[in-house]
Length: 149
Ligand code: TYD
Image (cartoon, rainbow, N blue to C red; front, side, top):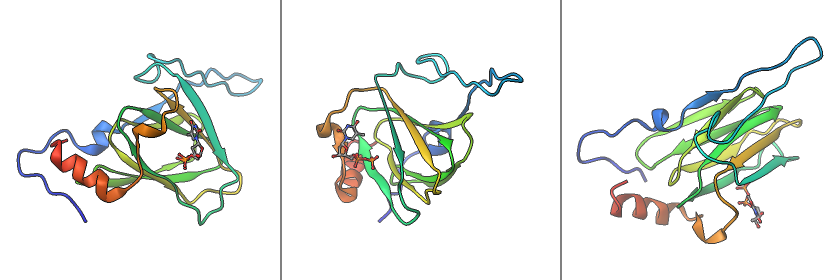
């Protein structure tokens, strides 16, 4: 099922989920990437987690968050993120430690196609609260439509 907007297009989903490029402070000794909350990414970081050892055929995520914002970075290996708001959908391939994708609140994400060496780092704007996760896609679409998001 896909939602269709009745009014004018809002800012496109791609624009709302930009790729972020982080500065490389590396030198001849190696590379160094620094991510400061509120500076390199648009929120203060309250939680960090990382996903690794996920097989290529696994789909993770499969949720939207009522409150949390995220930045996803493959600090090693690669994976894909399918991003949708029910109206639009696009896929990002994450394969560079210096690049992340920003995911605002109320945006659905699926992570998949993990390489064997994938380490997917996730920065989050909140502490974990299971109640702010929407894990049922139909329920998500209903909320998106009802709240005119
Ligand atoms: P889940 O949200 O399914 O992971 P992903 O979105 O990466 O596929 O989380 C897996 C389990 O870990 C689930 O039982 C909830 C728990 N968890 C926490 O306790 N804290 C956290 O910050 C996260 C992301 C998950």
